[in-house]
Image (spheres, one colour):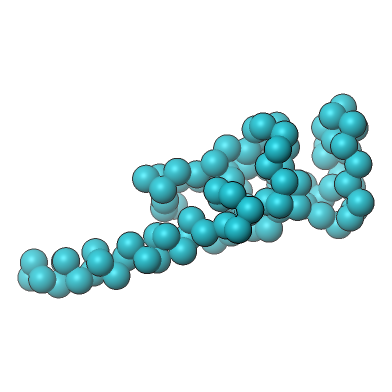
Length: 101
């Protein structure tokens, strides 16, 4: 029985690592994800002076990185995403793609 638990645990670690993989930085947990041309996103982007060329891009609002320790369904009760540009702090992330944890 202990050997089965050890094998299951060893097999789970690569899966957890894959769930954390994001080539542009850590997976983000965002309070909401909007189209770049939505009124809410335009308001935030405009206040920062940011122009998004691709109006079909998704932007995350109120985002924070998900830690490796917190991987799982309870790690992000909002919208887990991988974003191309996380350089605006937790306010907004640009070029997001939804991630399944």
